Length: 307
Image 1 (tube, rainbow, N blue to C red):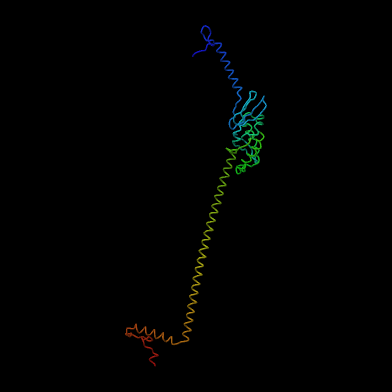
Image 2: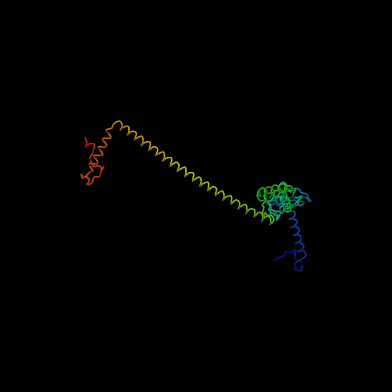
C-alpha cells in the first residue's frame, strides 16, 4: 500500500509517530461526532425520557428526535409486561391456609412515565412492586372468604384480586391488564377432606336421583294402571249401555207384537197353520209302529176329530 510523503522521512522510512498521532486524532474526531450528533430514535412501545443534569426535561414519543450534547436520553418501556408470583400464601376466613401462583400482566400509564421514572424505575420495570402488591392483595382478598367459598366463587375471587391490584398499582403509575390464577390449592389434609366430601355429595345425589327415578317409574305404573282401569270401566259401561239398549229394543218389539196379537187373534191361527204346513211337507207318510199312551199322532188333532 502506498504511503503519502508526509508519513515518510528523508531516509525513506515511515514516520510512526505521525501515523499514531493522526489515528488518535481521527478517533477523537469520530467520538466527538458521535457524541455531538443530534439525531436519536425512540423505539415503538417506548418513550424517550430526556434529562438535563439529572432533571427530567421532556418525554418524547416513538420516532426520531434531536438531542443536544447537554441532554441525555433514557429509553422507557410502556409495553405490556408480566410479573410471576409463585406460591403466594394467604389464610381464609375460617383460618385455612391457601396458596396460589399468579401471573400479572401490566403496563405503565403513558401520562405517568415521568413520575415512574423519577420515583420507581428508570426503564419501566415494576415487577418487584407488582409482586409485593399481589402478595398483599391476595392475603386481603382470601381473608374475606371461607375455604368452600374460595372454591365455589373462584371467578368472584379473581375479580376481587384484579380490582385490588388495580387500586394498588395505580399508586405506582401502572395499570393492570389481566391476572391469571394457577395452582390454587389448600393444605393436603383439607384437600383430602374436600375430596371425601365431594365423593359423599356425589353419592347422595346419585341416591336421590335413583329415588326420584323409582318414584317416577311408580307414578308411571300407577298412571298406566289407572288409565287401563278407566278404559275397562268405559268399555264395561259401553257394553252395559249397549245391552240395555238391546233389551229395551227387544221389549219394545215384544210389546208391539203383543199389541198386534191382541188386536188380531187370527194371526196366531195363521202361524199355527203355517207351522203345520211345514211339518206336513217334511213328513214321509209313515205312521209310528208303536204308539204309547198319550203319544201324539202326526196330523191327528183330537179336537178336529170330535168335530
